[in-house]
Image (cartoon, rainbow, N blue to C red):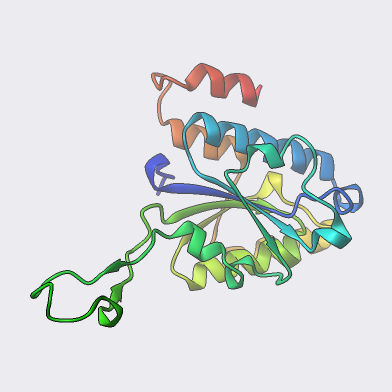
Length: 201
């Protein structure tokens, strides 16, 4: 199964000023996160960012936060427990049918809609804490989760790799930045192909 551009959203987890200097291969992970966000912007894929306890860990690093469409400030490690799911899903609509006057508005039941973009491409730090818990939370909410491994890391390589093993076992797809980019494009005939290629190279 390939990623579908029109079904995708990008979530970038906790690339924060005071955290990134302590992350194993953090510069590479951050470079790929920026690359992903720029590619998503070019291809009109919604981009969500999270910041965990920014009073302690600082804001998102310069050059990345401005690429976010929305930023969720959180204290839970699992951002899905703290409002991320609401941002990823369209709002519920009142139930249709019957006589419009049959029930007052406040008694009409909202019918949850399935997500318009159910494939969540996700990356972040630390891989074994906030990224892992958020990805598992999204899987529990019945999203398809694609973890961009070369844009994720932890303070140690061992913790990062353990997170990938657990995520794969839970049903997440493990991908790379280039896999995401070329699957979103599908063809060198895509109007944004040259611009995306420039970002990758």
